[in-house]
Image (cartoon, rainbow, N blue to C red; front, side, top):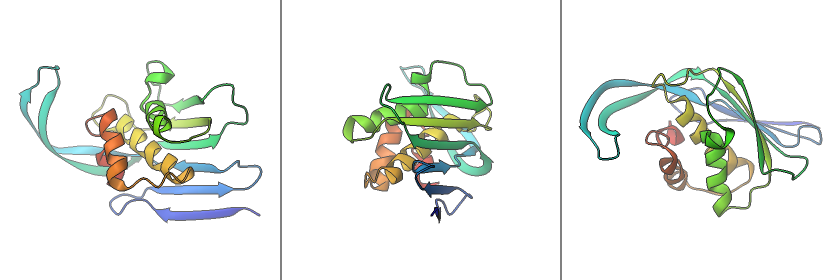
Length: 171
């Protein structure tokens, strides 16, 4: 039979991780990365790397993408990325969900996967869509492949990939 496990991912937003398991779903996992807004923004200084140090308050909102991961049936490539919805510029290997997969794969035994990303959060709007997708990918991989990462470890991985990625681990 089919098993459905629903559990609360966040106390501030309505993010759930849906886990379906049977011989046809191939351990399908779907999660819904949410956007955030900045409440106030104070630019402290420009750094030598061209970025800025900021003071802000992030607030999660209910604008969401959908992220689905399944095991690949064959091992001809470590991953495939399928994106629908809002167009994303750039190469697949530069996408933050792929970078999150590659980063965790360096330290953990993670099999080849198919990644399906439905983009609803506008890109480049300061809503954290890519960062959210990245963090939720880390959480999804942690759960799906039983990596047993703590919140702090997931935040560390997320922080390596983007300045606001770690926020979405606990949001």
